[in-house]
Image 1 (tube, rainbow, N blue to C red):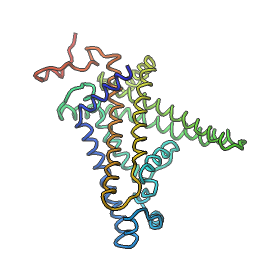
Image 2: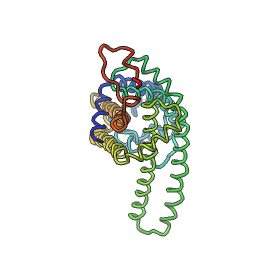
Image 3: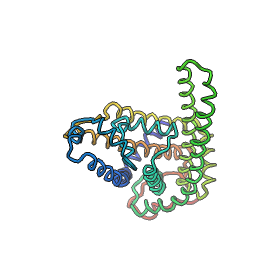
Length: 334
């Protein structure tokens, strides 16, 4: 069942290329202003100096240190940690250690989340129908579920605040120092911290899983109450723990595989020319695959729910009708 849902989810994503193409464009447009600002900062700092020639030939650490010491705003994020796979590790470290981010980064992240909250209802609706829908129907679904998911987002924000502020603080700021205060073996302390990371990660993934199926049930069953969707999500996960958790872990393995491939081919600091453009292409392909995996998460969860609980009244994917007509959008009632 898990593998069937995964394969079905992949097919649904691949049959809707416009969804991932639209997300790519939105991601690019949100990142473009910051990129242009950072480009201006680099031009102002380097100009036509010898440092610019050195930077074009490879990593100019001396100039980078000077730039980092004087940078403000988005320029503060331009560190050596952004080179190649280092950016992935840096982002992961920021999440698991609950590191505060720059205000400008928070602003872009919030804008991205708002856009995603608007689109996710239409995306889930498209995957649940499992057949092409026109733009009007897609954005209509986005509008309908945006206000419902806004209420769900308030609950999610409280949950993430609790996890990253209360639980994370208790595990790593209170419990870990207390448990390691008398330890004199660094390996034991490292093993304990790794175990705490696993505990925190498991709780975080469980919370994400709960929210995911709440969204799935809200869309597939056209639920208006988000409390009802959360309760329905918990019931579905409780009745099918092996399949829901197993599918989530398989999707997570798919994500890890994408990250592992990128780690093997991630570009390092290079020179001006074709190597620079090759590195850019590899990085953009990695971002595309990240989006694809995220969509597979949602599509496979929709597929699993429909495979397990679908019936003709509300959850079954519509039968193909030719010629396509408004009747194809209707759900037959007994």
